[in-house]
Length: 316
Image 1 (cartoon, rainbow, N blue to C red):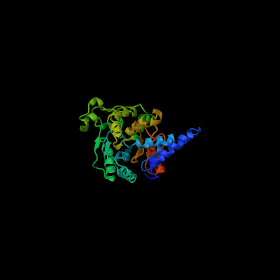
Image 2 (image 1 turned 90 degrees about the vertical axis):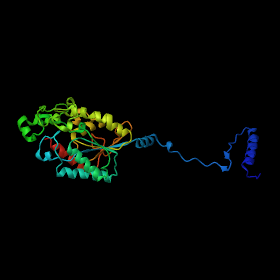
Image 3 (image 1 turned 60 degrees about the vertical axis):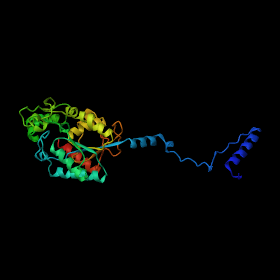
Image 4 (image 1 turned 30 degrees about the vertical axis):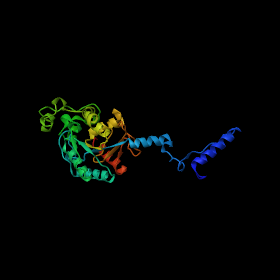
């Protein structure tokens, strides 16, 4: 056995410790293993501050949800109350949808499933976005519960003529209050959903004759709770292309916005709104969010603010 043998070294050190211990001194013995000295362990990242650990956990457990309001429709040009009427996109709306898709492509976003309404302005917006992303093959779920708010007896009427007839204050209450709906449409009206074949399989008791923002949310939220939310929790990347009022109902829930504040919130057409959610579907606030939202609009924020103001001006 050579003098450098680990076994011989251990014997020598043990004898030395015994001798010194008799005099009252304690000498630490280095750990020795066969094959040479032990390598130091790599430094663990768990020794970082609690805030860093929290951030890391959040990132690992986060999910992204993207919302897109459909582009402008042909009835925007005509200044007509649209609601569940099936108006298509105008030229500006087509361009807005295309630009929204390009912003998502440039941001590297991908999706596993898409949700939209049964109204063609939202459907077409989604198609254009998915085409820009080369994702036209992913499953698309069309549901009437994602339809725009039903404007009841106002649907199909010119907005200015309605103001002239009922007064600006009354029309503003119908349009922007949280829980006051417009007058109901008659069941004989072409705008009553029960007369539209696309709702043939929907219980007539569930079909609205008019809606407020409050009842629009009540109609939509079962889809969020029973389908979209669970899909996100399972790890699916979800995009929703829908309408101003159904999206307002959703962000009211996500951002915990009050009834008073949500009536003044405007969502611009065609601009992707990105939410990051934790595993419990709570929103992780984005520092670039435009309050009261905690999600982030893609694109130039000055342009987004201008487009929000443009939507607000439509209600005046």
